[in-house]
Image 1 (cartoon, protein in one colour):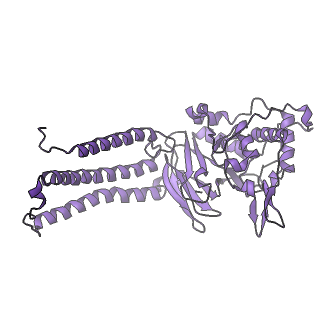
Image 2 (cartoon, protein in one colour; image 1 turned 180 degrees about the horizontal axis):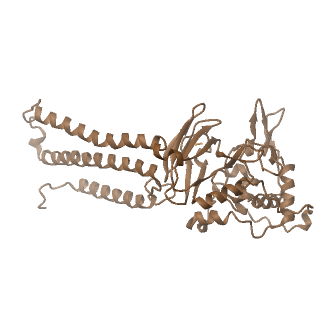
Image 3 (cartoon, protein in one colour; image 1 turned 30 degrees about the vertical axis):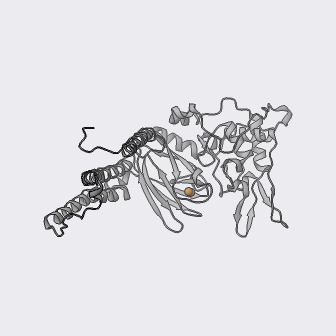
Length: 430
Ligand code: CUA
């Protein structure tokens, strides 16, 4: 071996393994930088400024790492013990107090810190609130975290007789415009995060936080609660849909309308209705997303705004009736129809959303049926399943407590045809 540093065989094996691990990490990274929740695929000025801070810090610390590792490797190899005598040799003469070296190291450290600090402070300042010059153009939205979903309120969009426009789990915003989001929670600490648009900010009880973000172009973005908030924290998701000015105005106008009434006035009996067979069997944690959806989510969202092509008015009317009979109305509101609840997501236009169950499942007939017939299998111990605490009591959901034993027992049960009718009704709410 002609190398100046002949390496022991096991050390060479270690280097090979390390190189392989690094290559794997880089290749794996290549795919997750493209993913729907990648902070490297930035789509707005706030996320871009935060990514810039990451890269600045990475470069400075990366250079320090390479220099220190090179000196360490050199010293380790050059001065290693080569034979028996080396291992028992006296240490070489020691020295200390070299002012030139010490001052240069201090100066280099200060220089490195300044390079990191200046853009960091600038980004903190910039991302804290909408820039002064843009304030007049900013759009305002209130976001509230609940176990385990998000409520979005549009404070500048009053709805006749029903307060402000409220939606759930899908935040529709104007593109190319700063959006200021006021962050609140009704229970525990959550965190609002849209990786491609802006870094996370906590939603804290009794404290008003805010953030701002902007989507450079119309698009469909994934969001995620980023603070552990209970057993379903990991499946507390949402979407942000950024629309151009015209589409956004049209969406607002549609959303402000009460729920539509495509259903027939006379409710047909189950026998008169076409009921599909019970073919839906789901495993816990089985995926709820279609490849077809993922190829163009914004286009898919737009198509979702139109009425379902195979709507059955009689079935829809039966579903609307069941929505009352099965007590769904006590927690959910459907503006213009029955429904008084505010503890659960507003469902006035749930059929026009691309997601259900807190952004967990794609909104289609199969997933809706899965969600309303087995809520605990989709999102363990969610409040639709175990009920909502109301003062000292609990408003029962799919399960209720036995008064004497305290054991959970079934409260709401849906037959196959009832589930079909409810799904048809929910899908009709565009
Ligand atoms: Cu909400 Cu984690």
